[in-house]
Amino acid sequence: MDFVKRSQEVFQAEIDELSKVKNNIGKEMVQLVDLILKSKGKVVFTGVGKTGLIGRKISSTLTSTGTPSVFMSAAEALHGDLGIICRDDVVIAISNSGSSQEILNVIDSIKKIGSSIVAITGDSTSELAKKSDLIINVGVENEASNLKFVPMCSTTAALVLGDALAVCLLESRHFKSDDFEKFHPGGALGEKLSARVKDCMYKQVPKVQESALFKDIIYEVSNMRQGITMVYKGSVATGIITDGDIRRAVQKHDDVKSLMATDIMTVGFKRILPDTKISEALRIMNENKITSLAVVKNEKQDAEIIGILHIHNIIDFK
Picture (cartoon, rainbow, N blue to C red):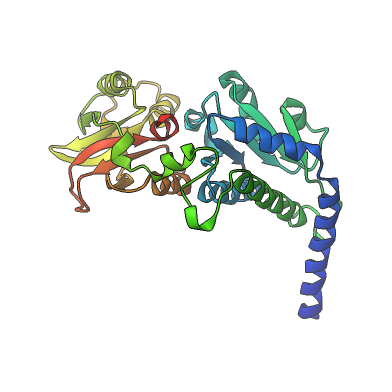
């Protein structure tokens, strides 16, 4: 096989399919940009498998160019990750076929929350499209490989659509390289991203000991209303329990009464310093698919936890 020639053919196949998709882009792109610009929340991407990876990349691009965004795995959504989503968010689901069961399983729950749902799909008649408020069709006729079921041109089309969306948003906000954290109008979003963690974190830290029973864990998570509790061994934090961990424990165990914190906690946790910019906190949350960070006094491994930063703190910060 001539690998040079075959590689060039793959490039050309993808270029050809992108040209077709480009010509199909219409007023729905205007609607999507307008929807996001008017939204008071964030943009949540969801997908599974390769489309999940595409969604994660687009989300990262939006976050780095002034539009707060997170990625939520559709496979994990029903096990607690739906807590990422708020009513004012715009949820963008990516599925070429529009029939991925993992995505369809969470759409009705998202509707109950009240978020707007946008489908990026290759089939505008699919079940996902029917359940969405807005459809962006990035359907391709062919994939680059002879194995038509391997997504190549289709994932490239979704990725380029995401880049186009990022450009439209950053230019609408007059985003420039020399004022990364200042946005139009009035710099409101820029003020959020230039703020420090200490400006909007919770200063009360929910705590339980490793030996705490399930009922005590539930009480602490509910009482502090932060969706998590830190787990301590003496005076040293050793892990974290989220409301997602609690839901998974209930699903896994018939009798949860005897469970202790050590049985359901995640050992270790992501931490951040109080003087860190909010933009960096968003990046860490996005990369690790989490919604909370422990704010530590210094960089020592056993540093005191002085606060909790939840993504809702960032969204609500003024």
